[in-house]
Length: 329
Image 1: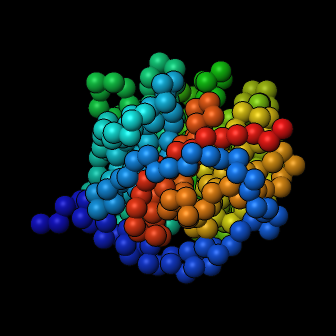
Image 2: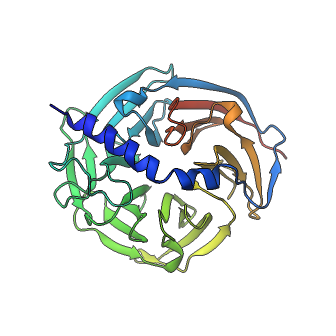
């Protein structure tokens, strides 16, 4: 009998073969305004290896105060915790769709995507299955089973998740529908916050990574290679998107370095991490020689940098790369 996991892995292989052309096009690409790095990242190392055969393709990350990382494993539908020493523990597995997730838009397999946590330890996770009963925002509390607290359209692909803990709102990017949804941290009905054309895809995946920073929601668009800033207006209204950087082929998720609007961003198929300066220029700081295997997301704990690598196209070594950030001043 085929298990849901074996069916999911088979679907993943078929899907990845179908988009291999995309990978070949963008792997060699670099941002048009990229420069060579002056070693702002040091002590680069692979801290943890994950099990590709078990679907442990890490998609997104949130860091706890002690440096512990909570991550989503896309293909295994799991939420896992990585200790500062590199040990992996599975926290939860989301329920499998009855059809195996073959109707999940754009990808054809069910996947856990964005993840954030609140100061009380509650974890929020996005799940895309192509089915109305499971697609949406899920909540994990210690000692409790995962619970869906907001439904999202089955025809979409909820991907990036950002928390405004002050405003008690969650923001969700939909990479297929070109929409940012907003949901209260208590759950409820999702509201379309922005459907600006800058969020739309051009054939594969549009709006992707998301972070709340200094009164705005920042969003990447994978297809368009852009980093957007969308002001959060009074009454939780969306302002007009501003393109803050472009030419970022294959951009996925990102993190602010703590120096104003400076960003580290993961460029997935090109296998690079770039530093985006406040003026929109970029510096390539890591590449495949540093252990990158299709980087998906980045987080910072002080000057400690965590980079997840899903190995979607390389199909070799999904892992967690760690490094230290040094600023040029």
